[in-house]
Length: 408
Image: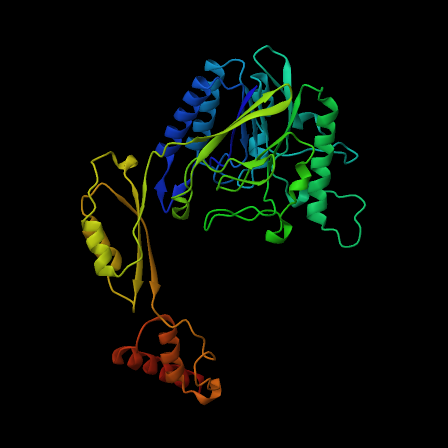
């Protein structure tokens, strides 16, 4: 049995105001072709289908159009999708019965019976091979929110959130293992942040209660393979436990990630082959090296880019390191871009100040020994290079006098 593991699509995502629909369409077309050419038996999508809990209608259309295409082209393809922390559990669960009629498994949340017991039936999905026989069981656990957890028998010092998550996975995986024959694999699916997982710089949210609630990989020790979502950088925090990563960069900091999907092959219930399949980049990201404004403008003017439709134009990040504030930066950057086929995503500005606090200087003078103007000068030097201009100091002192007069 061949399984394709992917996650963190974030349909409906915008990058600094720029729509990503073109890139998502390109990815979904590529994914459909990959499923066909590699003769995949099951598609697992481990959460964050959408970028927000209230995605635009176009994002829902993208998802349903893709699922309908796969069902039409591959009547026997198994498809299991779970909700992530960006997704709305209720919205994902709403079409459950309709999708199940087409043998599509979309799980937005867990449920419990009247006595509070976890209902595992909906979370356990049999995966059939080309011969129609069950080759694996998938324990499809969506992102678990604090309200989903009802930990029993907490001991002193145990973390409620981690223990609650552990009990949910333990219940589902133990039931899944009980259903597995010796020649059937048990696959865990989840959307979580594991200890030793590497977050990207900008675009991921720590889930549950934060980094202190990173989950131990031992939760999944009973599974033959664990397909996780949430971390956008593809990685394996433990043996047999894999994050596929996101298929496209969701922040400029992810521009150099090796975006991929994972193909996993089982034979006789055992993992036989594992392959990382790179996802082609539909739109490039250009991040200029940090420099002064004149150097950045020269670098922009030197860009030689082929003509292409606006939706396929690269994103540009201009990173500046300045001695002091400059006027009309954005205006000058846009003028340098002119009619070049590139989209300005962001201008980031850092300054060459000392970074020292008031107590960090060599003299280490007490705050009550400094005049307000001296404090202003020191604060300026902390962020910027050199002394503030005389006009700026004069403006500060004028405001200071107004404050003093209004307080009398």
